[in-house]
Amino acid sequence: MKVFNTLTRIKEELKPLHEGEFRIYVCGPTVYNFIHIGNARPVCVFDTLRRYLMYLGNEVKFVSNITDIDDKLIKRAGEEGVSMQEVARKYEAEFIKDCDGLNVLAPTVRPRATEHIQQILSIVADLIQSGHAYVAKNGDVYFRVKSDKDYGKLCHLNLEDLESGNRELRHQMDDDLKEDPADFAVWKAAKPGEPYWDSPYGKGRPGWHIECSAMARTHLGNTIDIHAGGEDLIFPHHENEIAQSECANGCTFANYWMHNGFLNIDNHKMSKSANNFFTVRELSEVYGYEPIRYFMLTGHYRSPLNYTAELLADCKTSLQRLYTCRDNLDFALENAHGANEELKKKAVEAKEKFCAAMDDDLNTPAALGALFDFVREINTLSADSSRETLEQVAQVFDELTGVLGILYNRKKEEIPQEILDLVEQRTQAKKAKDWAKADAIRAQLTEKGYVVEDTPKGPKVSLAK
RNA sequence: GGUGCCGUAGCCAAGCGGUAAGGCAACGGUCUGCAAAACCGUUAUGCACCAGUUCAAAUCUGGUCGGCACCUCCA
Image (tube, rainbow, N blue to C red; front, side):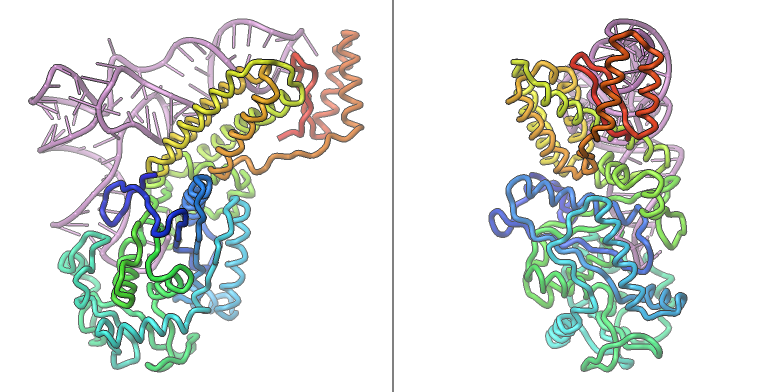
């Protein structure tokens, strides 16, 4: 599998540090509110990456953090009149609920920043000792950016460019806490009323970037395979993580950096600060969760994706085609007595095309194309295929949709006898050419939430979608 | 100002040197008592525009126009 590495800006063959095992760290949300669908993009995309790597036979250690200490959390706690921790726990639970709805596999570890203070302080101490960080007069601790000759290697900007583009910030630097305007806090001295932890530098709390460095190191070791997140994290978040981690650990922090493009609304970045966002929760209540996940897969993960309600509705229809195909497969299986084995070949082709797409930097739109080609073959050939063929085809179909994490809402409930009786009555009415009665029974079934469809092999009953 | 990305049918979106996948929508047809689902067919001689390279370009080069992002909290 090849993957575009932000660090080198080329697609590279993805090779783990340890054969057959991937260690992945994906930056999780700051839990101060419900997540919006922009936040859901990396969650869905990198869950799909995880699923594919597992499908390929790898073990995947997947760590995704919860940022539960941050300025926005403190602000929100003030607004809601509760503690920061209460806010954080509340929205963490809501976030997990959304993840479950989106069929996102639970991370191997879901660490919280506030539960890694000691590890954070340990890195801070290392950095100070090696001269990469210094304590300011107010108790802040800053990373000395000029001490890291590699600084800027991820965002591909040099310090001068970063600073020259940043005139406003320079003017704001009216205090003399920092040696250099580009230096960033790894530890912040507590202001009155803020949550704090004791440290050798006084009461304070961790800077944002250091949390991820500490949690990645704690749960995945000094060098990880893949570090991922939204492209807006490239600078400063990930650049700073690299600086801290590599200066503290003396080795490469992450071999591959993957970043997803933005989810836009009216072609502009969706963000809480711009107040132009939809929460996953509110959309799930209208369309369900699954079309949201599917929507994330309709575009390449590195391209911008523009959200509209129409698109989400279209996604729901597309999913319907997939569900219908899968149901038809089951129906064909129940009535299998054909001998055609051509579909076996089609299943192999579908799998190959699907994997070729996924191997090429997680090209999910192309993978979906392969899936839908397969759907057409199934719909055309399943009726007279052999049982063995259909079983293999169903397995491949489930594997591929499973990799994408879709089609997880199949209802396999038994059809109640009462319904089956009605269907039988309709069949009799049809035999007697009593169309009025047959249609009345069909209407009755619809009312009860079931759909009858007539096929050459008899009536097919299913739950209405 | 610096650094990147993008512009493919009504909508979404692959393709990234060899003659335009797929989904949604629309229209016609087959099947059906009628439906539904499905299947078949139609819908871009053309991929923002202009030059150039090449036997061959949506794909490479240069330019023009338009859009977006990062350099500040952000997935």
